[in-house]
Amino acid sequence: GTDGPVPDRRLSIKTTYVFETGQIRRTDVLTPSEPMDIQDLRLSFAGFSGDPVTNGAATRFQSGDAKTFTVEGIGKCTSRKLDNEEDYRSPAGPMTSLVDCASVAMRLQAPLTITWTLIYG
Image (cartoon, rainbow, N blue to C red; front, side):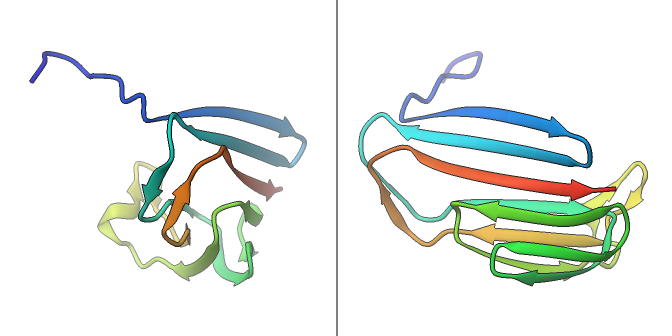
């Protein structure tokens, strides 16, 4: 009912990036203002490297510049090839792989840290 966005103070996030040669690491710390029920959290990574193989929280790519994508703090990850799917097209062309990570339902009562690391080169 307003002309602009309204802050949602139920959850805050602090995001940091670390850039190193051949590696990017992102850390998100989610802090609830009061305990809250979360149905699920999802983190997806789509890219141009091919033939993803996921083992636990680590995905290795058999071809392309991305070598591994690892996630901590969110739960189970799966990966699959993409075949020119509309949601994963870009100006540079269609993305070829997807890593999808999801949590289970939880009660968030304290800060939750989620980290992903991309190794490339």
